[in-house]
Amino acid sequence: MNLKEPIVLGQLKKEKSSKPIFVLLVFALLIGTCFGLPSIKKYLATNENDLTRFYHTYIGKYFDDDVVVDNSKKEDNDNNKTSSDIKLIDDKTILVKDSITVSDIKINNNTITYSVSASINTYLDLVKYYIELYDENTSLIGRVKLTGLASSNNITNTQNLAFNVNSSVYGKVVLLNDDDYPEVTIERLVCKYNDNIYTYNFSDNKLRSIYHEYTFTNLDDLNVYVDSLNNSRIKSAFINNFINSSSATTEIDNGYRFTAYLDLSHLKISDLKEYIDYNYYNLDTLSKTVKYELESKGLDCA
Image 1 (spheres, one colour):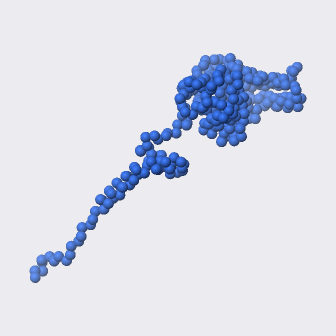
Image 2 (cartoon, rainbow, N blue to C red):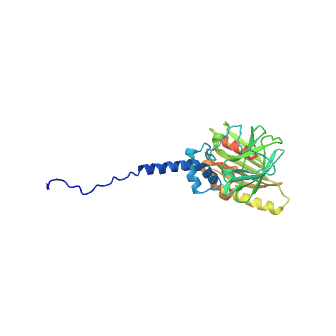
Image 3 (cartoon, rainbow, N blue to C red):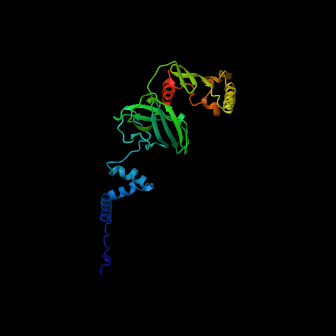
């Protein structure tokens, strides 16, 4: 035997490739997903959970032709609306927007009465929620500014309307911003409401000062009169603490009169604390904002 001749001891078997099995598994998963999508969608439509949000975020957008995008924070504020959330106003109508719910809407002559609540406490005078009213052709008639402190308990408001409303009225609740208000150019605006007269002075269409006059003439209940008089006197004393602002409460023949001049360059409305009046606005507020919001609240402005 030649010691240099190689000796074959055995032969290794070739390893089988796992690639064909992997490809088959991926193919099966894809087929199963495609055929199972209708059932998955049906389940997720009625079961809101983390899996639902995962589906719509990572899967549904690639397979669905009818993916719904949440545009609740965006508003189309054209004068004509065709959105399905416009509802015929009657005694059973409920309008919802974000955390705000409006119900018991009644329109009589030139006034509107409604109940409003919110899942989160909301000072409606400080945000721009409106009831939009439409005619039967879905053309915008006008807007009503929501006011008051909305909470889990309903509050009821009655406001004057600055426009005429016919029998068939449709509505929805919207959230606007200053860009949605029509432009105006004014130097002085006088608004009246329930024995209140507000005079707003502007420079370059920006608010500079406010003069407020309120006359109390209800003498039917002496206790009510005295309480109101004392509260106005305390408010006057408080306002007099601010630079260039002044206030007085004086008795007259048939009641009392409260007056206040507010120099907004030295006073923020929030500084008034419990004496705040939500028909006051801060320095540099645009004239179009003041006019539009006050008229939408039901004040008579000129």
